[in-house]
Image (tube, rainbow, N blue to C red; front, top):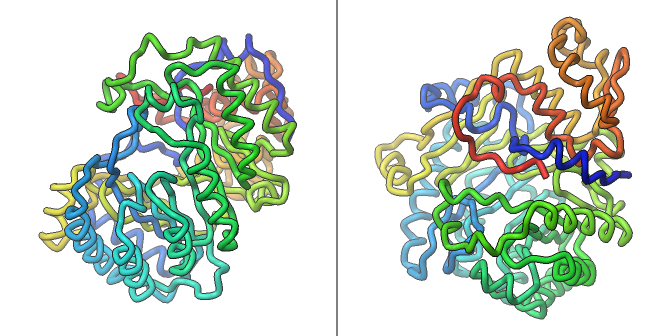
Length: 459
């Protein structure tokens, strides 16, 4: 997909906004949504009998990366994991009592934290309990992925993960410059990362992806060029290149970053432009919102076939799946609802011990939410919107229902970011980097919110 980089436009539109891994976004979740509401939505979901996506949050890391904005527990005390897994198993049992477990699990993801913080026997036990509790596929056709810190695994670990059923591996890299690594407390030699990627290939992984971050302390255009070349040499199927969001008032580890060492806005834009040019010249397709993939990758194919979807794990090919998430802080998406577990591990444990699901907040989507979610999905995944299709699905007259939004889109059209026609919106190559700005105009919840929000800059 072609994209055009226009620095002046990006500077003008570069404000904070959601990444739209959900709509409405998590800031709209409310504690009024309870376990009872979740059960009601599961009942409706079971009647449709669609496939499932499972997510497990493993919060532990043995070191803390200063840039991290994830829900994690930094510790070298490996005795904490048996207690956590004991409670996770109980949560799985409670979910299995509600969900029709004959429904196939097409997608499985372990995130964190660092899921490979778990020891070998714990990895085997958790996957075995998953197969006992839910209907996992046995033919290696499922999309079963795990996040890996290359510093925490060996070739034997990759072999084990492949044997228990994982076929997709996501590796954190961020930057290969040793000075940058020291500044964010993540020392990770290239050879170490390459060895793990080689192990993934040797064990016939279906896909390997790596994460990079720009905007970290001490990064320069020249230095990040080396990171990009190293990443291309590693030959991943997918890359995620995120802009670092410095929010130390929310994420305590970020307070240990020297703000004077952060690249300024112009330098970050130069790094982004270089990233886009380098990766596209190397043959990667720009999928959208920080993601790149090889043309033969499932994400690129799904986008070409207009079947791409976006959820809490980013872009995915599994639009038809209900997402059941387990573990501390995890977020489920089940039949037009979102529900989030307790963020504090002691509160999570207390809920499980009391025999209740640890749902602490969530949201039942209104018909307007469902309509706007469909629009934001189409725009963020495919950069276009067919008004007649929306009208047929939802029984609205698009130009009447969204009269205010259409008016708000006109300045973006004047700036060449999109083409607004009688029955469609098409985002132009120069507007694709600013797709979050386009989506935000349809976000009625965002307009209603006040106060400081934890959103990153759109670029």
